[in-house]
Length: 101
Image (tube, rainbow, N blue to C red; front, side, top):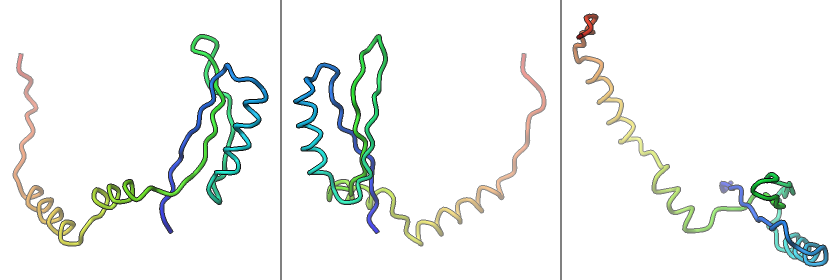
């Protein structure tokens, strides 16, 4: 199963009702299958409020390539990390209980 990410669409505070209805219909028609969309009002009185539509989508090919590049762990790299960990465990360590003033 491919990994999905959350994406957001924000609608400004100053939108006519007719424009908002048309926009929401277009968004609903174009959402991917199983998107699980949510609509929330975000913001405050100082910075303004906006409608936010949050939904899930599949990774784009570019995002998937980056994800594969940086998240893939190879067994040989895991073994190398474990070997380094064992070497570091063997390094003698003396704690200094004296504080310098």
